[in-house]
Image 1 (cartoon, rainbow, N blue to C red):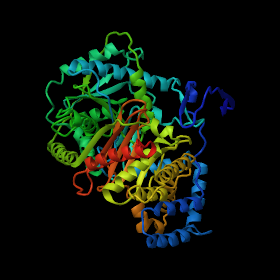
Image 2 (cartoon, rainbow, N blue to C red):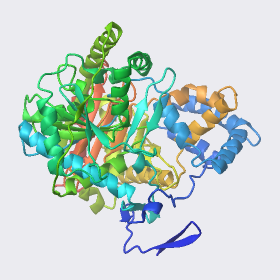
Image 3 (cartoon, helix red, strand yellow):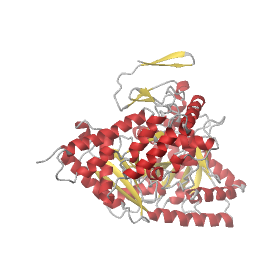
Image 4 (cartoon, one colour):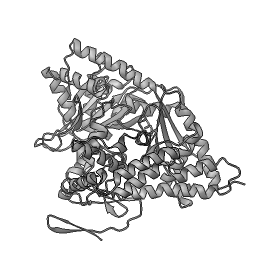
Length: 617
């Protein structure tokens, strides 16, 4: 039994089975849907974080540099020193805020970032191709998809969405209602999030984009009931009949710009009343549906990569990039060739809730129909300034897209069952494999971040797990050395070290959000940034050359996003029972990184690790 208090009532939930590392779901009433029974996120002990930081530096830096940093860290963390004072303030902050770090994290990591949202920020999820290859199949599937998403939203609204549990603990469900009618709004120095889902008159429409033309589609009947799949299909046919030709001016391209540039263009755009109404319709809509033209198919081998890239950025200004509004929290992409996926904005959405939504879409059934109103086409008045803004955005987006190398592949030799059989965490197994593959290509370990959820805490978001450890360094140095006999033992130690860091992060005791909190607390108090954060070592430790992420899905989907740094990679993976989907991205402008080379090395590395665990001779 699991108990917690709500409105002075003792709520009892019966758990039939709670497995370690699995998410268990329990239905609750509407009023409980948005109530978080998760505990507050702890502020980790200062000494523990500083020790963890120094340990994380050891595989990345030479001893003399670490000694210099160690002295700096000791000064920062001494009793009564600056670190202790900042720690005290963080503990106070934790006492009077919903979550002491999440708002800061969202502001610092997303809203203050000035980089374009496509590639640099918004993750894309590409799903297995559907069995259609023309516009008829596209619209039929899109109708089912919209109906399924509306059904999911209804579960949130009525409290039927199951509360999720991990390791026997309830997860915070705060992000679910924010998925709908949310949009990021550009600003000169930082963006902000507008959520219209909790207003008195909640929006009842979605935005459909085809051939760069935007339509406002009401998806609820006059009596408040949801439109059926058949009704939605009729509306999509009407939209198709009104959007035969590609619009000359792809307004959505503007949202792909550098945030400061887009912020200025946004203000110019909204000076006109018609433009303001059209933009507001997009921003307030429940979500967007992008009806794309087919992905150019060169070969079966490269199709998966092109498909993922298509969802991520639209393929360029001569393809489908004009069918996106990158600020929108949720954008579903359905191509005429059966390709489909989802693009989301990270300030209000995260992988696990998105995976739950996608699972619901794939499980949904059909319903009956009735009469509907016409979809409303959204118009824009384009003057010379806005036309210039669009042309500049088109050039910049094409440069960004041409610079991104995307390599998607399905590794079929084994899946997560192999490490499980040998009592290893599949995620930690893959993380060590990534470090080894990177080392073989670049002859060094690098700062690498794996993502751990913090949703077991109230208002929690994410924490980084630092993959390179001393144990990993020992293993990668030993595996190619014929004189070392205990390679398997060293491999186990490397995997176990990553698993231990994961467990620590899941308890709220990761180091990176705490270090960021200490730095931002100093800024908040008007102090100079502490020397420990101005040190070269901190720069190396936070120059994430490997941005990694596991897709928490039971389907053959693949996530894709761009690297965090110009000389880095982004690697997403989705381990299934007997295979693993990977996507690797790198920038072409960097001569040292090459997605295909790393992909080939990773495949060889995984096969070698299989041989290490289960020798064939």
